[in-house]
Length: 182
Image (cartoon, rainbow, N blue to C red; front, side, top):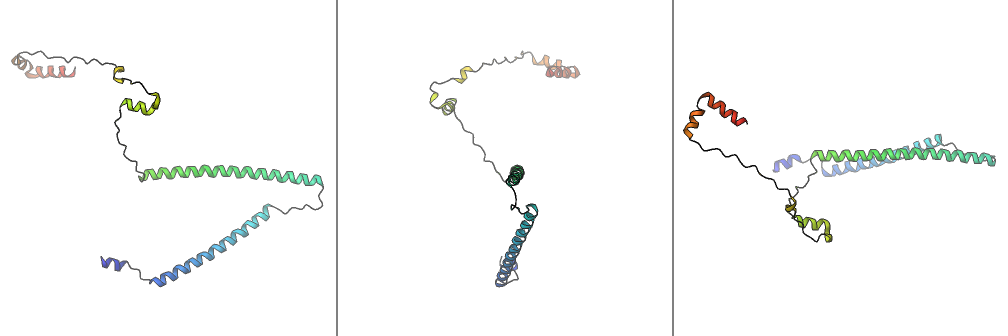
């Protein structure tokens, strides 16, 4: 047991390991800062390409109204696209959730508890279902249809010696086979 623990020990000392972790964290932090700045620059470039600066000086009232109508129309189009994309994303999220639930069930990690059989009388069940409305007792067995059982055919008791003689040979086996099939 001690040999296994000694074999599992890493060859790097804890101080060196801690130093490496610190260096990795600082490098990752620097990379995140650089990535955020790049995204910010990309966003500014995309916005400057898509949205040119407004030139409002020297425009008449009619031209300003036309510009406002045009901007409102563009806003409506963008809102419709945003709504459509939001619906698609929600639909995909729901599908992903359903699929992951199915995978979870297929892997067998979801264990359903074994249901216990509960013996309850019909009266108790009605009182639970109907509550205070249930006052009179109902005899369910009285309402069941009675089934008449067919009387079993009684074989006639005959002399067994005659029966043995009749069943001997191939003819007897044929009779046995014929009567068994009917």
